[in-house]
Length: 280
Image (tube, rainbow, N blue to C red; front, side, top):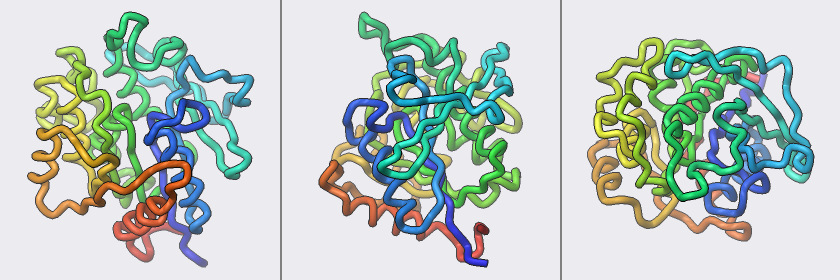
């Protein structure tokens, strides 16, 4: 039986559900190109309150919804919704929760201040994605994370889910764009983040709970890095340099008409996949 490789895309933004940006364009077109190259894909993003469910034809997937995720000692229901991008022949799964994702703004309030619970939203999103993929019984070879909210996921996958048969062989590829680095999280982020076999010492980079240090944490637990921009914060560049031997894909032009990156990203994905790592 022919092996079909599988790539899980964890995005902060996907066009057309969000405005055009580098991240949302990649979130829209990279999965399509990956699927057209012969791989299977699953794609996730948060269901922000600004997304019009009727216009985008989102509907709840009852068989995947229903579990609760505990964040900061509070049980919160996980709701999974799905929409199809018919022109790309692909589905997008949305992680939803009334407390975290029904507000109309994305990360900041009307006064331009970051929401106090952005750390909890990121934790909920990461764990929601991983638990939903488990429920799908879909075993990815590559997990591609992009956008700052995805930065919570690598530590969970490498520390909590590393022995789960669904994720045991998965490699994490992290795309970095340098967005939302000025965010500062609550001082108790580490105690909220801890779950299962993930311990405080695994999250020591977040002793100073900043967006820069969250990016470093994601780099620490990733297997490969894609530079999505020509200029990253010097601290992040330095931290990448400290990860001796980690494969790095250099920046490439990204846009609606710029599609060469899709081919190169898939070659990069392929470099992490062993010949017999997944099955049809």
